[in-house]
Each structure stands twice: as structure tokens, then as C-alpha cells.
Amino acid sequence: MKAKVLLDPYRPKVPYEEVKRVLSEAGVKTSARRADIGIVVGGDGVFSEFGRNESIPLLFVGVKSSRPTGSKAYLAEVDFDELVPLLSKLAEGGYEVLEYKRLEVFKDGRSLGDVFTDVYLQRGAESNCVRYHLEVKGTRPPIKESAIGDGVVISTSAGATGYFSYPDKVRGGDELIAGGHTHLGEDQIGICHILPTYTERSGSDEHPLRYTVPWGCRIELRIDRPVDARLYGLGWDRRGVKVDTRDRIAVLPSPRTTKVIKTS
Image 1 (cartoon, rainbow, N blue to C red):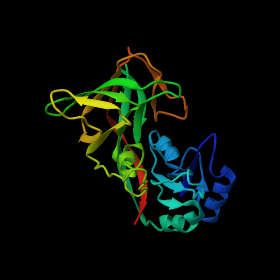
Image 2: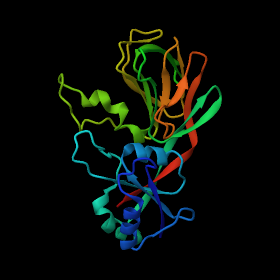
Image 3: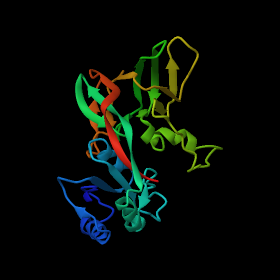
Image 4: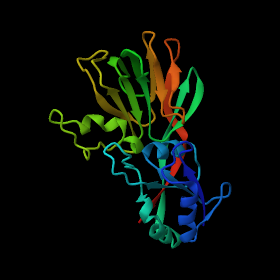
């Protein structure tokens, strides 16, 4: 078995040589080109980035952190310090490869790439609230909403434990329920407004915070007033993709999938 080592190019949680040493100890060779699997070491953000653009099966390896704000790596199949015995299990065929659906994001008709977990339209660091409109095509009746807030998250099932789950994490005033994650089905797309001061659904009395729509829907976004608004989740650039009032954003199912290794 040959593996491709995939790390955060800027702030890897484990040095490349250390990962390579552990793989060698387990009898796994490394290869950047002709690899059978990808070993992704990091947190959920790193998993999300490689999950959106790699075609080989991926094993998500988390790194334990003692810091309260350290990586939680909810998507990890194994911790790094337990990787050697798990690789031995893989060599014996004790695993399966699951395929996760992706979303594809467009700006003014041009593809910005795929999303494995989530994409979110959010205000920049020095911006006021975002006033935006959201439309879902493919539901009956179509959903049309207006909102004022920090932005909106659009999530796949793989991203359900991320930003999409923030309402579940805050219950009982200031209490943080870290294990209260939402779960999405593979046939669902999650939509969640980020800290809205106001939402309104056209033709109804609803003021939605979070909901799901069937897979296959097309979600369109546009902002209503000039503001520092950006799309995040589409690459390593932490500045995101700038969006202004002239831009039209569309999110819809991608024809590609992400292959994830799960042990039995």
C-alpha cells in the first residue's frame, strides 16, 4: 500500500518527516503521485480542504490537543498516536470506502470549486452586518428569504458537526453543549443563518434560523448593500472570496464525490 501524506502547508500539526516515519513503521510507503490512499493529518479544516479536491480514498487522522480552543477533529477516523495499529488493520483489508457527496460553488456563472463540508457567506473582519437574499430552487414552493446577520452557512452531511451545528452547542443561556451536534442525511443540504438579527421567509410568517432542503436543490445568494462580505471554505486563503452587490452566488450538487476510509 502506498500513501500520499496531506498536511496543512502553512501550519502542519505534525511534521512531514514524523508522519513519514510512522507510516514506514507500519510498513506503508509514501508516494506523492501513485498513491492508493491519502493520509490527512490535522483538524476538520484540513480534512475539509483536502476532501474537496482529492480523488483518492482519504483517511482522516486527528491530533489531540489539550487546549480548550484546539482542534476537535470531529471527522477524524483515528488519532495520530493510534495510527500504526490502524494501518496494520487497513493492510489486512479491515476497512471500507464511503463516498460523500460534494457541493459546487459558482460566482457569476464561474465555478469556484467543490465543497466537502460547508461553504459560508460571512461578513469580513471590519464590516457591519450583511443584508442578503437567499433563494432555494427545487422545493415546492421555492424558498425566498431575506436576512440581516453575520451571514449564512450551506452544509453537506460531512459538515454537520461544524459551523452548521452552532445552535445546538448553545443551550440554557451560556451553557455550551459540545456534544450536541446536528446530523444531516446524505440526501440533505443544510442551511443555517449565522447570528441573525432578522430573517423573513417570503409568503409566510416564518423567521427561520436553520433548516434542510433536499439534495438536488440550487441555492442562490446575493447581498443587498455594499459591505465587506466574503465566501469561505473554498481554499487555504483565509481572506476568502470577496462578494459585492453585483455578484450572484449559486451552490448546487457537484458531480464529484469524496472517498473516505472507514474501519470496520
